[in-house]
Length: 269
Image (tube, rainbow, N blue to C red; front, side, top):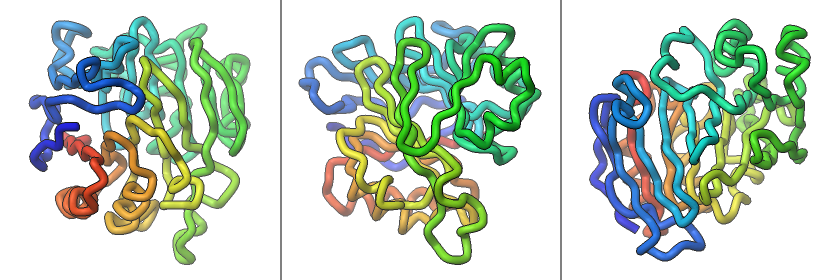
């Protein structure tokens, strides 16, 4: 695996070039490249592709906790919120994931604009109960520990919650989801809003993780680093990190010597 220099980069710069070292695949089959989405997608959107023996995954950050993942003809949006125009340069989704009900993760108007008349959704039960009927008819609710399939991909719902006493009200245990799924040959963990819970730490075989770190809503960089070191994903993107010291997070993970590649991207540019 190639560990890259710690740089926080904007939408107008590529990041994390080099071999990703995804589990179960030899290095000759692997690669990653950062690029704009101008040629592949149109527009001026940063993208990065992690190549695997099954074609790879393109990562398309949008903002804060919103992103898209593309593998072949399959495109998954995660927690899209805000102006639908921010997604204009992305390929249209085959499926949309929602982790929980907070306004930086769920917005019914944004969903309606992006989902059109046919795109299915997978949500936690709380969000499912809030959906307008037109979206609910195409949504599947799964709770912690449950699974569902959509767009040819199987999704496992991982508990996402707070464990620190003065944060328990933000994400109570049992309500919100993270998701684990395999796309383009990569096992992906989208953690959602969580601290380094036992379920977070227990994830194994993760090739690509998206991990939050901001106070008071999730966890600080020390707790995030400790949990990531125990989980040991191949590649980790901090997201949902407003106000956090990402350089400190990366230093802690690097110093553990676990061959975890930390990729820093400016989700707020």
